[in-house]
Image 1 (cartoon, rainbow, N blue to C red):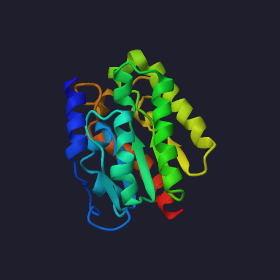
Image 2: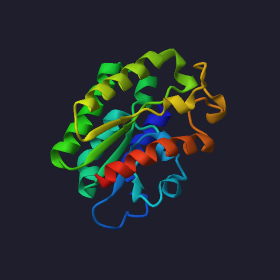
Image 3: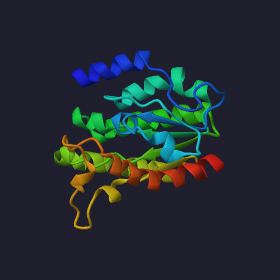
Image 4: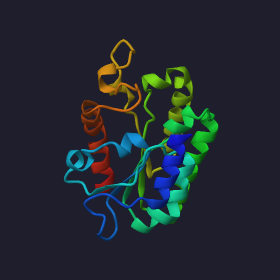
Length: 203
């Protein structure tokens, strides 16, 4: 509950962070929860892509929906990178409910900004969530299927780099809470995500 209240407070007071925060239409806007918010090397690892980060700790998919009109659409981003749903899983939400809010976000952004592309980064199968990996997998599966039917939506699965070949998590990539990521994990994510964002921005 404390994390949730903290996130709601941030939602009301946060400011745009990024090298293009004071400029016109944004290039790539990152929205979501702590996995993006704590990506402290995001700007350097994505360089020279123009990125800004609207993510915050504790965010759930309904929080991100509330960002659409006030924070996302005014920026007119060419690309939105989305990572959220992990906290919904921890809150006991169903896969159907989580996916529906993700779909609503995508639909609202792409209806208002039809040329904007959405890149959904898969919810990671953190060891902390092992008891609910089935929910994580189902949300990811639904988004992947939805993205396959939409020309301006792309699904990116980052889970393979977070796991060993035998199917066990690479625990060295996770913090002691078995949830948040260490710097080495972000290097892996950047290697996967950056080419996708580069192509989406160019397209």
